[in-house]
Every structure is written in C-alpha cells, then in structure tokens.
Amino acid sequence: MLKSNKKHRIVVAVGGSSGSLYAKVLFDRLLELRDQWEHVGVVMSDNGKYNWELELGNQDYLNYPFQFYGKQDFMAPFASGSARYNLMIVCPCSMGLLARMAQGLSTDLVTRAADVVLKERRRLILVPRETPYNLIHLRNMTALTEAGAIICPATPSFYSKPDTFEALALTVVDRVLDLGGLDLDTFRWG
Image (cartoon, rainbow, N blue to C red):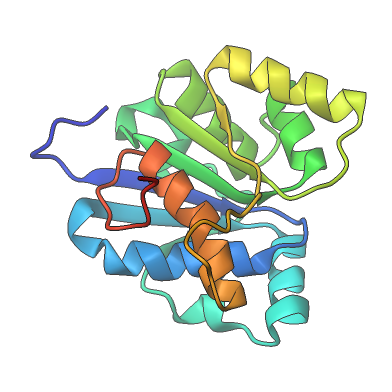
C-alpha cells in the first residue's frame, strides 16, 4: 500500500467480456479522482474495443487522457516491477483472460502486468463479468486469490437505489476503487 503522501500508479486492463459500461464508469470515476493518481496506463484487448463500440455505440475510450498501450507493448513501464505500479484493475475481465493470468501465461501486456503485480505483492483486482461460473472458472479464481489477487465480480448493489445503468455500474466501480485504496465519497452501509 502506498504511503498517504504518494499518488497511485494504476494499470487498467479492459478485457473482452461484455460489460463495457463498467470500464467507461471506471474511466470517468478515475478522472474525478485525478488528485489521487500519478499515472493511469490502459491496455484494451481487441474484443474490449469491439464490445465498447458494440455496447456503448462509440469509440469514446479514445478521448480519455490516460496513456494507452498496445497489447504487445512489453516496453510499457508496468511490464516491470521496477516501475512500481501499485494497483492493477482488470475491468471487465473475461474468463479466458482470467485463465491465462491464473496459469501465469505472460503472452501479452495484460498478462505480463498481472504477473508483475502479483510477484511484487501489489494489488490486482479482477472484475469478472460472467454468469454462471463453471468449476474451471472457480478454480482459476481460487488460484488467483491464493496468489494475492482480489476477485470482485461485476455484481451491482441496490442499497443506494441507483436510477440509471451508470449509477448501477458505479456501485461496482466504487467497490473496486475502495479495494484499490483510493479515497472516495460513495454510498456506505449504515
């Protein structure tokens, strides 16, 4: 965990499962929390881009002021532990991507960055958007949890009475950012 006077260095990976709204709301929320991070590096899978365009009807991911990296760009700073990125969020996370991370297959920048975050004992948060889970999915999630990752399924809550799809997605995104150690004003039980 970072000392309170340091800003986060964050990797966001957008996997290829359905749920692009979660990625969009995450990007928007990170902009609101700009004072808490030094750098946000983003890697989007081809299917992540395709699903964003299909589900949200635009390419607005291109308009965010984050540093985007190609999926095979192993020169990205977070491909090495020495860059000291302290948080990685995979949102949404497909079961195929989750499986590759669980097996330690560093075949692209996302899986390499996840491997680095785990080996450096930093925070990796995966937001799977799949239902139902089969036994292979559950075993892969168990392996990643045992390695230090946090599995935070894209399961929204209704306590705050969200009235839009974005507000509903924000219930998951805020939980993810809470788990990541960012300070935010969000609905709290009680």
